[in-house]
Image (cartoon, rainbow, N blue to C red; front, side, top):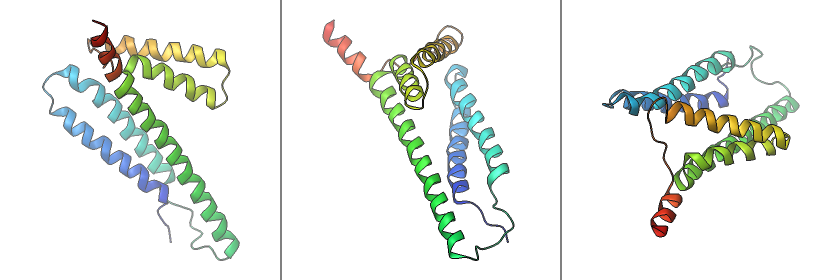
Length: 162
């Protein structure tokens, strides 16, 4: 008998959120407003389908027969859950940084810290940070004509100065 992996439920939840974003984006009037949410949500949906296809079912081995096998399975599930929580914390921190600092500050900070904390060299992290920021800026402001959100703090500080 096949069982659905616990991590597959998380993937299904993420896919449901992406589908909701797609449906809400379609209802927007201007194409500039719906372009980025449609692209990102579509990519998330495609990656979710691929993940579900490759990992939704465990092997045909059935229930674990020995206590040792059950303990190994519990430890693996904890590691998977810990990984999802850690990734969720990174994404949540990135969203808070975008809200407070804006895209033009949050993108390089997130990229630099993420790469450095995951073992990259300073040179590699800085080069990738510059590339990612340049790419995001180029596809949004000059090409699509979408002004990136500047952040709560920079706007507030700008009002204080002027």
